Image 1 (tube, helix red, strand yellow):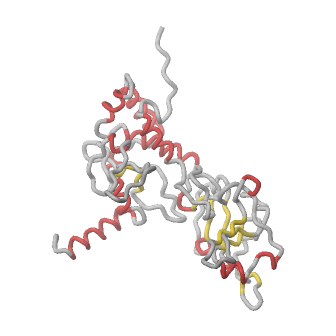
Image 2 (tube, helix red, strand yellow):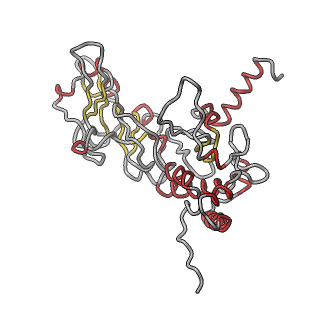
Image 3 (spheres, one colour):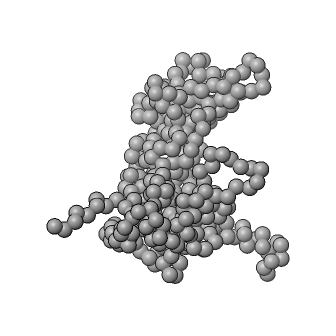
Length: 327
């Protein structure tokens, strides 16, 4: 009798640490409780959009946001002074308590525009109606009279921790799935991956790699030329860091980054190589997408994180020229 094939998913055959790393790419980064953002949730969760972005011809994804959005306005963006009343030029498509909330982050705003003056309630839902008109994340001060103020989305009774995710981290469920498969495709092209899989007890890593290749080709995400043009694969179809262009080793996706003496953190989980966005994440662009994600070195990622590869290379060129290392 012919052996039954294992059901295919993007994790098949991969070392456990790398499979987990790919799984986590579908989540947002961490967020502290004193912010309005959710901590490590799916990238297709409710999106938070600053009203300043909304007013500048904000571009929605082609199919909209899967779990909706909430626009956030600071009090000085929502109110006109003398006396405080809603600004007359607020966008017509925004309605307080439906898709718009006022966000308090400064104590001066809390005191001057206190929500109790308007009989407002803290929001509790991510779906319209939002259950309230505001959120507060006001830090404490050195004064003994002041304490931290946290209202709205703080526990299971008020919507859970955080109101939503950073808009630039958004990706649809379809895109999340496609990028996970493509990252698996790239993981199978890192140096030493076959040997590493065998050491973890995978008896047929080559077959697993071939099955991922076939699936990615079927999904239209295995274009080697495009991956090379985007600095994700080299001319030998090996996975490279998009910034320094050095080969990525499978072990780097699993081993923790070396810490400087005296700066050791006991619970560090950052690995030597991680998810890398070739074009940086920006509001209204949605760059967590296929053919823009690769595996990059931790320190290269730190340098390019907010700029992407092109601007970072220009910055590096200026540094080298200023130090007379290049003409």
